[in-house]
Image (tube, rainbow, N blue to C red; front, side, top):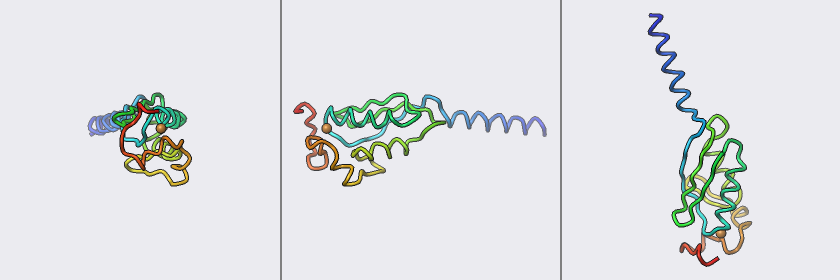
Length: 118
Ligand SMILES: [Cu+2]
């Protein structure tokens, strides 16, 4: 009985550790257009405590993140990104935040990827 309890505890601890990765890799969609957006998105993500790496790809709109799950989570990062005016799938930027982006970054009006034109 004691051994069973112990192994259950061990499995539980292992599962906990696994769920809270120090260097958790994540990718999610963030709306934007150009190199200016890239800088803004990455800066917003990196300003979140626990985020170690952020790279936003202009053509695919994918944001790659490495974060410490003990310090942050995806929603916190997304909240920081929408706060600077960039939509994610789950969270949308407020009109106020969206209007604060540079006029050439108004990704909602124009769906073409014209990153090369800036
Ligand atoms: Cu832009």
